[in-house]
Image (cartoon, rainbow, N blue to C red; front, side):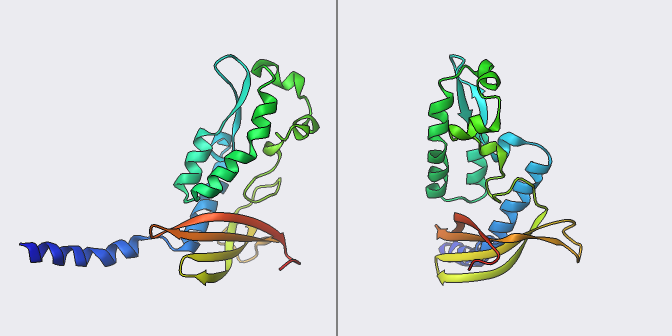
Length: 194
């Protein structure tokens, strides 16, 4: 009986290994999700939203956004950096009653002055216009636990041969943690940069 259990476990190991996502799949799956929630207008899914706290002052609700970053394999380190990047905004908007927010901050420049203009750009593509898809151009292996994916965004039909490519490259650094590839850094560079 003990031998049968051991054999069964050994047979299941390759299946588990095959079920793991490749680094390229992690990147593609994240951006497919990201573009779909942008297109459907589900703002709270892909960025924080302004809400009233328990006493009616303004704060940010990042719950769904952060849960999605975890779901789409972001490292704890990148998630913590993302949360930290909003702390000044939270501090500044907490001085304003939620029902007075638009009166106190009527223009984008007002939000920019206090570090709260995040809603003016799509964070993970660093552009004001949404994209349709991503093409993986290169996989750069640093070592067995670190890979960099180079890609380029495009607009238009994913199956079309004539895509409109964006003038910037995407670089996504992934770390292998507990046998799972996780996004640790996302960087956007102009196509004339290396």
